[in-house]
Image (cartoon, rainbow, N blue to C red; front, side):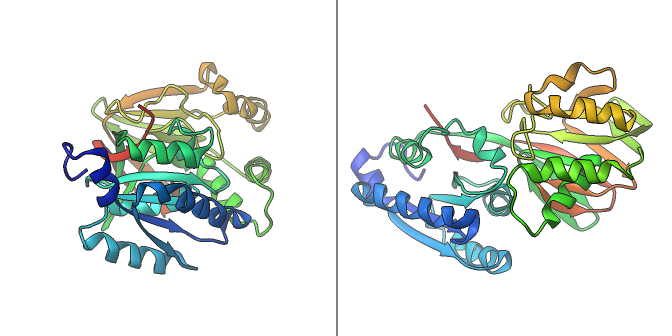
Length: 308
């Protein structure tokens, strides 16, 4: 924050918060959460500005404009992981503190925030006592592309599942990932990767390679259950080739992180990794590129509201 020595009252009076949402998202839940936040924040006399637009392009443009003013202390993303992904492109590497109120399908970023019970009240409490911490992000480079992510970068089978799930026009919640898995599995073949880390170069075939900063994606699938967002290192999960039957048998274990002991699952830890191959990359559930990628950890690059 601007001055750690200010009194609690002066912190309240000078705090400027930017709420970012699409009121229609989450079947209107985003609007309800935003209204609840504004109402419960009234005793603190914070200055609250809302961005509520109908497209990602417009939202990001106004977000950039607001942040360039230099007066914003915190951005609250009222939505899902896609909105969080958009916001971190603008606030990562700064002192602006990110908060999230969950109104998406997956809400994996929020799930690791520790503010799960009564999120509005807990977020307001965290802001009022200035309880925040810094976490890591990942940086993706591919040609001219330069993108940040905070949870999981997926390539291979899981990225195709993500793509398929995002294509559904009907809303079936988290079940869309299970349905997409079954559809993609029918025609999927292992991908040949060239993997470069500080441990050397490997050429291998895999069902997927996931680069984990956080623990989960896809609405709570614990792809990397022992990951920490503040340890300064990636956990990279490689799923070596298995039969379609075996993948269906193992898949349900991902929701509790019980897949990690399977013979085809390998984890490596690294700060930097490059991947080449015929795959699409998704990060925080959003499409990134279909080209080769270089990914590096960005230590303590994002400030987030948290419990004490």
